[in-house]
Image 1 (cartoon, rainbow, N blue to C red):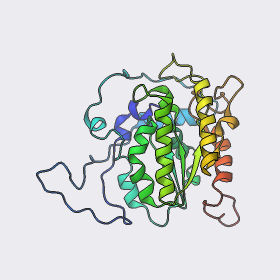
Image 2 (image 1 turned 60 degrees about the vertical axis):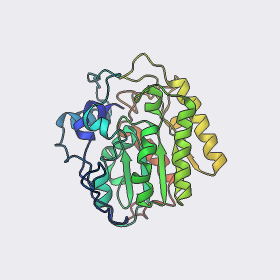
Image 3 (image 1 turned 120 degrees about the vertical axis):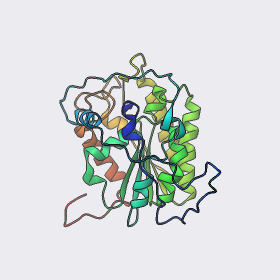
Image 4 (image 1 turned 120 degrees about the horizontal axis):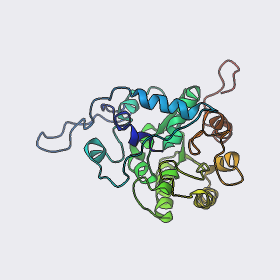
Length: 288
């Protein structure tokens, strides 16, 4: 889940324009920090990141963890100026044409899903995952990356990085509050809420001392109950992917955390069922 931290130049990006569905932004006075475009130019493609993604996604491929930066170093540069990564999708949001059916909001497990199965993210199905993010960061970009796109439904999947402490120590209640905030904001704007379970993990390669499996199970019980109590859809990826020890097995993941293409195929089948009313109709008789 630290792909964006390890390859920061790839994650921070993209010059901003205003989505067509939103009123044009008026230029701010030159003597304030509120400007029309706060984002840096797009970063050059990172070949190292691309290679790592393919290593994660290709089944039966050996995964060697890359060097991990010190976790407690203060954020600097663009990462400090844009902690929730609002710049990441600003240009892509502005370039969208046609109605948005579903937005997938999440971390690297969501971000890599598009690389694993690009055909799924077409016809108004939009991926807005960012590697390394916690639920607190997602709350801050939910208005821009979900609500402003006016989708019919949102698929929220978050929690792995909260458990791992990517943005520092937190609490289970803070995580629950963040999920509640995103779901409440979506519901208030007429967006159907679909909540994905946190996928299984028995270890994190960037935080090897942690034993996350029991907490992930506990949080998923809460997510399922929260969805039931509020009339939302819950998709139990954890049950479909987990091994008896609570791990994400090698058949579904090369690094024990991120699904490979075989793992995403299992997830896709469940997502299609949960999101069937909102997905594009089949094309030429071919099931999407």
